[in-house]
Image 1 (cartoon, helix red, strand yellow):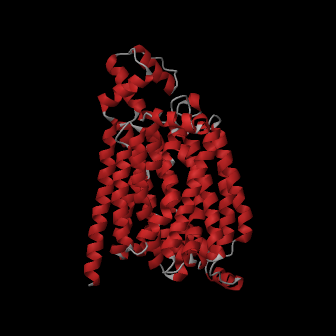
Image 2 (cartoon, helix red, strand yellow):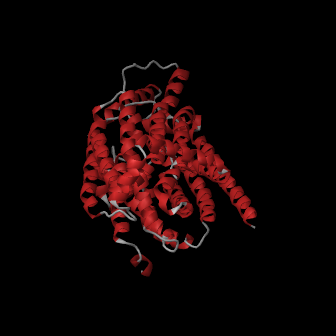
Image 3 (cartoon, one colour):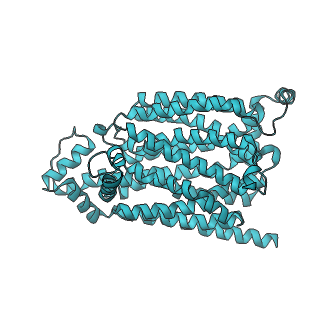
Amino acid sequence: MNTFRKFSKTFWVANVIELFERWAWYGFFMLFANYLTGSSDLGGLEFSQSQKGLIMGVGTGILYFLPVVTGAIADRYGYKKVLALAFIIYSSAFALLPQVSSFTAVFIMYIYLALGAALFKPVISATIAKTTTKETSSIGFGIFYMMVNIGAFFGPMVTLLFKERSEMIFYISATIILVNFFLLFFYKEPGRVSESELRETNEQSSLLQEIRKIFQNMAGIFKDPKFLVFLLIVAGFWTMYLQLFFTLPVFISQWVDTSAMFRFFEMYVPFISAHYSPEPGVMDAEFVTNLDALYIIALQILVSTVVMRWKPLHSMMTGFLVCSIGMSLTLFSQNVLFTMVAILIFALGEMAGSPKITEYIGMIAPKDKKALYMGYSFIPVFLGNVFAGFISGYVYQAMSDKVMITKSFAAEKGLQIAGNLSTNEYFNEVARQVNMSAHELTNHLWNLYTPSNMWMVILTIGVTATVCLFIYDRVCSMRKS
């Protein structure tokens, strides 16, 4: 309890702002993959998995690359001003996204949304780094990560209630962002220089000169091979981790039998079975995936307390390995109970490893350049998103996509299917022509084409990152000694 008293008011305000921002973000992002690829009769856009991977991978990758620039802009012009601009872009992008439906238009609008997030991220991370000490950083970043997951949990839970009207997903997120405008009145910038010092800095160099300096500083990463290797290793972790949002909701929607979960809630909590089910006997895929956030809300402080005395690299290694096992197992079975346990394993690894990445970089960053270095912390997330988009797009489409598998099956059987059907109508027509129910056809395709093999790809990526981090730690330890 004494540790909690050491945190400033700004620390707590920043955490609440983060909670609402993540509420708005995950309220749409958890549903985004199925919105892009879902059947048109359910409000989806029926993009291919490859198109989904391109939008989510490249678009979100840009989101995590831009903080390298936006972090320095925040240091120059002030955190509060940049936060206000971020919220304006955020709210307008959320309102405009459901107005477009072509691949190009959705891609452009998503990048505009990513700009708002890119302005926001380094400011909040830098605020947490500046308002914690070496003594409190582990618990501080654990609290921060718990806030992230409170928002990540409640966001989808609210938007799923309005899934029948897909545009409401975005309007709700826009409304939640507006709450943060009010919270800005209580936000005081940590370690803020005076207005006269800011004016003097602005007079000494133009914005273009400042941006040029940023990229010169970025080039400095290549002069530090150790730090560069660390960022590349962490990019492997993010490639595996991001399948939680890019692949798992689609996989559950396409392949996992959620009837056991539906029956449980129908018997004991009928509100959930009534509101988080697209049809009788089926739970929303995003509801199942959202268990990850629930596990973290319940266990993050406990896990952070356990690992607070661990060296950051040791905690990361443990987290990467456990996370990799959990994520790969989520794609292994059609049994929703197995999936729930796998998500718990994944969450435990996530809690041990992910917060330590930000903490580690925050510890080694110069005190007067926290935002800039927090911007560097997003480089591996940028790379991870691009790679994750490829895995969840082209690789998933080739190995596990139910739409492509059904079309291959129909072609092999020589079935004649009308070309103007929605995704769901096409699948049901194939099932009718082979005298199977939709459930029977799903099981038949599962056994015939083994889409679960995707788990081996994910496990390989995660274990490789873990082994590389182990080698990195050993080499660093040898140099210190």
